[in-house]
Image (tube, rainbow, N blue to C red; front, top):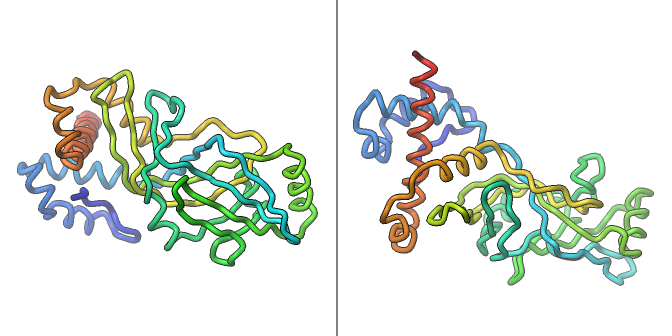
Length: 256
C-alpha cells in the first residue's frame, strides 16, 4: 500500500493529522517523533513528484495518405530498455498509460512548444491508444501555415521523430546490480506528445535523481534479490522507506 500524500488543496495541519494516524505509517514508524518527522518530510517534498519528465524513443512517425493527411506512429514503446538516463535505465510496462488515457487532457505539440498545438485528445484531433507496441498516436493537424509547413517537412523525411512528457505515478526500482540500476514505469500521467526536430536528451526530475543517488550509495541487502523476485511491492516499499529515512535525517540536521 502507498504512503500518504498531500491532496490538492489540503492544508499542512490536516495532512499531518491524517499522516500521523495512517495505519502504514503507524506500523512502519511506531515512535511518534520519528513518524512526525517522516510525515513532515512528505509534506515538504510534496512538489517533487509533479515535475515533468521527457522521454524519446527511436520510432519513426509518418504521414497518412488520406485526403487530409494525419500524423501516425508511436510516442512510446513497451518493454524496451532505454539508454543510460544518468545512472539508471528504464522501460515502460504495458498498461502504464491505461488510466491516464481515460482521464488526462493531452496535447500534441511541435517541439514541446505549447504555442504550436497539433491536436488535443479532448477535442478529437489527437487519438491515443495502447497497442502491442506501445503508445500509438494519430494526430489531425490544423490547417495553418506552420502546421502545413511541418507536414511538408514530414513527407520529405526531414522531421519524423517524437517524444512525450509525463509525470510518474508509480514505478519500481531494482538495484540488485549497482552497475545496472533499473527502473520500470508502472503508471504515468501523460501531459503531451510532441513531434520533434531534434530529440532532446531525456529529462528526469529531482526525485528520480535523488532515488538513483540513494540506490548507488547504500549497500544492497543480502536478501534483496529474493525480495524483488517474491515480493516486488514489499521491496519497492522498503526502498521508499529508506528514502524517507534520509529525508528525516536531513530535517533533523537542519533543525540543529
